[in-house]
Length: 425
Image (cartoon, rainbow, N blue to C red; front, side, top):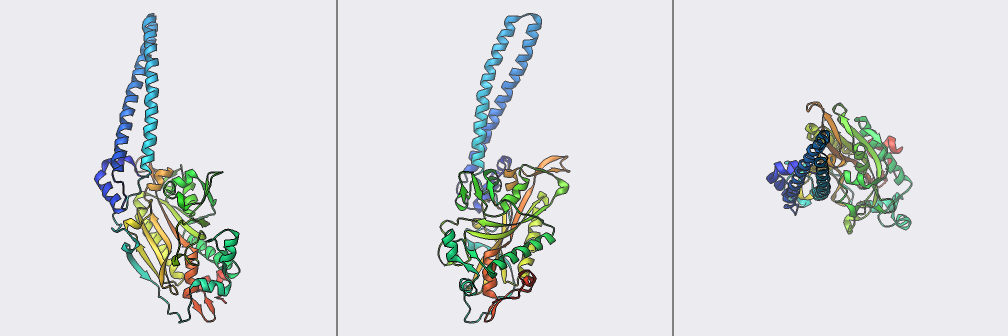
């Protein structure tokens, strides 16, 4: 959530940054400032009337000491009247503050100056590419056929158990999932990330804290009886570990990693782009999250990108890194890099990771702060970042497609010890 002072002190700049994200209601900035003006006016009136109560109450004691009962009673009546007025002012302040918060959460995060202009994925900027695209045999097939051939995933039974988009992994398919999760977690913890296994459901406050609410209600599975949400990513519970907390500056950066299943309704998804593992409602993912000093967040963002790039390289997959344009960014992000790996059999790029800097946007909503040494112990909003490290379905799809041979799927060397075999046959 943006801070009112930012809107007030940099109004024109804020509007220009919102335009980069193609935010439709730019006038909302002026509405919020006007509401804050009203709040300030009411607060001044409250403070003035409260000062009158204090000064008049002091006079009551003086009147009583002088034996002037009539003056004392008149003063008491005046105090009672002012207090009644104060109650009305206080109600107006509460109502205005509520309206202010309701309008503030409608504003997305401001995109960084590094964010390129543009509205669609075609406008994203390729930062760099790596790896080598394989030359597959003419008989090569997409992963949904390989899955059936080697008995790795049963979509039909998954649909019978739950519904379309809920795959049932089995045999070596389940084993490959487990191997990838363990490898990704080991890779992250060796880089200094603390491992967590979080709850897979969160309450409304947690979903609000990371920005899933009110922007993404339609993407989450909701349980109204308990007012819980199934997590779309472990970013949500992991970031909320520090909700309403004040850290010491020397505790920064906080580096966390977690495995979780992820649940996404993906309403409206259809067509060839969702075949097989390309888009499912439940999938596994390993996430990295950092809470950092504001001065370090963009440096940390590049470190996280490099960390994930190295991980993709160990899987020997061709990849490219994109800097997302304003129109293709999430509601909460200030700058996002997407990782895509090349699916040789499908001849298309598949997104496998997003690495984002949210600056203070999430921290303001979740009240994640630290005591600043430079600011003499003042509580300062931290910056939060997260990245997929990695999401499994499309990684599996590309591993199967790009490494298919007549004798089976030859796995990259780094996975041999985790999977226990060199080849899926």
